[in-house]
Image 1 (cartoon, one colour):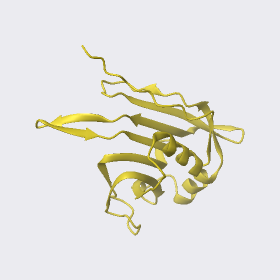
Image 2 (cartoon, rainbow, N blue to C red; image 1 turned 60 degrees about the horizontal axis):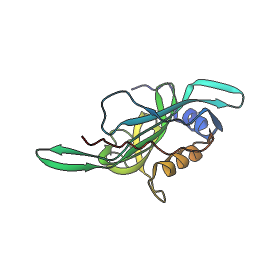
Image 3 (cartoon, rainbow, N blue to C red; image 1 turned 120 degrees about the horizontal axis):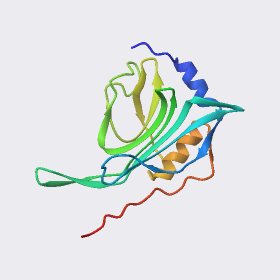
Image 4 (cartoon, one colour; image 1 turned 180 degrees about the vertical axis):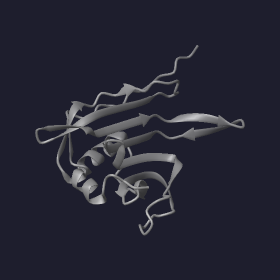
Length: 172
């Protein structure tokens, strides 16, 4: 598939200092998700130019249990932090311990055709988005992942990273 963004262009955007024009405020995603999914999105500014095609996107879903064939299966929380140019995710950190990421692209790169579970970093390749490599951080708390992502991608946030909303299921 022909990409409109080269690897060099993506790397230049990642290396350029950027500023989120909005402070992080978690929004509940529409849908009947239990637990709910929360997200945040902000366009980014480079120097004095607001780039409406340049986005920081964060999403989170807390841990939950599902039942399959009468067996309870625990699902860990998952979080994603991504830098987008238009609809192209040029950089991202994903944390999901229950669904492996499979690298279908990235021929010649170290993790091509491998499965990665847990925390991983997506990088833009000549084939576009979809290649990831394992990522090690001191812990996998959402605030740690978000902080590492914005630091590595040269994004300055307005204010601090607020705590994630916690849902309490009511008992009847």
